[in-house]
Image: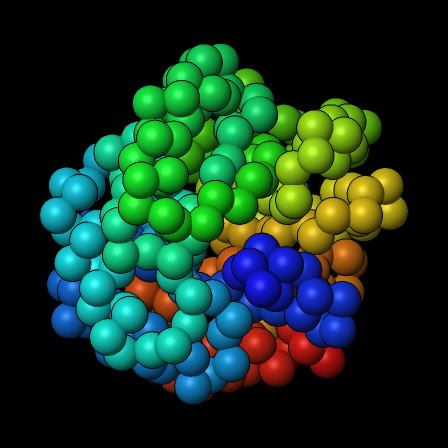
Length: 245
Ligand code: 1GP
């Protein structure tokens, strides 16, 4: 079974948590340790990504260290064609739907797709929508941010993603966002689509993660907390328990 189909099957059974690591934020050795911890806490996948440019070698080393320390699937969450690694299991083949830059919509993908075919990592199609405040992803992605209260536009993008045949839809408030995407927006999107809904950006506590899962998120992504929380083992366990409840 492909990684995408396995995750879709799991989403049908329970809410999931993905851990996100930016290769620029820790050494590969530390990334390996965090991956082990994430696996033990019950996370379902490791995402490796970031908005700022990282050397391909750093991505490779981080992915290798994660693979060496856990059995979790490693899914690249790339900011462009340079953010690739042959050691990953899969890649979110994601289009940043509200970017003004054609590169983030399709052109980087055109340039990176042959590499993906050659090294045989699994592409997982995903529509990616950045909502206010958007943080670094919004700035680097040259995005027309969706207003936090504009449910209709968010639903429109989500449906367009599904109609294009993409497998996942990601609502992003931006890494480190002071406030995550609203519960109202998550509910409105979830009511209108039948592909898995991923929500990330600014989710730092079990309480917030629980709220977002209850509102309709199928998969919750945490990054900043994962990298910065001093007591991450405990926090992660609490977050995952709250998502599954
Ligand atoms: C960023 O949604 C992810 O793309 C994670 O955000 O770093 O705020 O957890 P945080």
